[in-house]
Length: 431
Image (cartoon, rainbow, N blue to C red; front, side, top):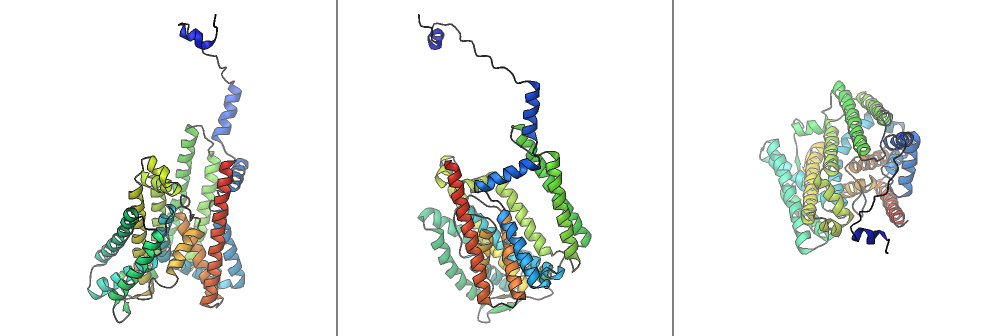
């Protein structure tokens, strides 16, 4: 007689499910502690594991910022003065906004080489509409953003329907937009923006009241604490390792102290620039959209694997179009702010090293050229490095040629780090 379990079940005899002994209360409590707590030692171990797997995060860029500031601080003490740090914040705003657009395109593994020219067109529209034709500033901003949206939509449609590489599309767009900029500005080559205008005041003079800056710094730290705690609770509910209350409070307190000290230091020379606050707010909004929305998850999925994203039901074409539109709109907005900072719309706006700085900032900040990795804060961190290097080299009276070579070297190092990180992740995936 066949006594195998399948034979017994076929004859109608129900199989008795094996009894699994329940864990003892001591084991339950130990598992709970391992799952729901993460002390300093566990944090270090997890961080080391991420580094070995190629997930470097913001570590390289933070180390780079510290080294750059320490080096220039030693070579020229003026670099670390509160006045110069305040100037760095203002200088970072316009090109940082352009870099934020570049980040979105790089996340899907593409590139936009025309952001400099698009910024120049945005600057030119500002000069023609706001200065020559007397448009309200709000209407001028709407036209500038609409122009960016049209250009980005054109890039996206050509990329999707004709499969033309983004490198080629945007290179052609660079030339076309440069011609449009020359047509808009006219023979004079420059349109001065009144220094009494609200845009110039916003970019050059407006700062937060000191009490508001301190309150805003505290609010940012509180928002970080709430977000981190909510994430820890979500992970704990699905039995994943998560931070304890101390693991949330300690970094939040350090962040609060750091931001308050930074505000105090910059306030000694005037205050925190409104333009930089707007840039930082855009970074926070984009970070939320990229990490907390369906669209943002689609961006990362397409950047990780276009075919896998398509099989998962993601609107790949719509995702590509959206990032091209966003990139061009940010470039146009950044060009308008650049004109406000310079006090003029000219043929020089958007040319020179604007393209280089924006792309370099995104890559140096940690956004991968291979797609699928990075974030909005890459623009903030990357532009901090780029502007710090440019500002420090200016204080040392180095020539433009030397500045270009040094910045190119920093970009090369960032790309090498990105490539090594990509290789480490592939090797870790095979292990």
